[in-house]
Length: 132
Image (cartoon, rainbow, N blue to C red; front, side, top):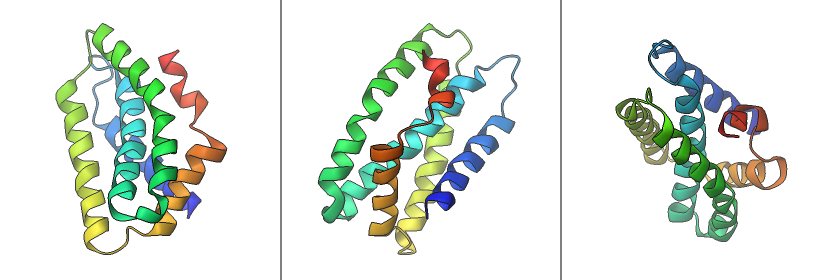
């Protein structure tokens, strides 16, 4: 399950990165924003649809906020950041998550895997280094 989630995250990040014109967009911030939003969207859905993992999802979500705050600071300082592109990435991810929920593929096991990744393994420090 974990390998599947990681593969989905990185394929979505790669797909979103390929659409960028690196000479005019800060693709690194978009990649990190997409990465963090993947976890945020999933944790919010876990809180809504699986009460058994709600508390642990809240705790895992708290780990995202310092990074999201750093991201917001970097976005505000960037002259090349394309907010519309980020909104599109988030909307596409939300649509994929909605399809997963609709197909009954959004399981408690999925939520537990997301929480475990954040709680025990943590976020990818290499990817997040762009925020430091």
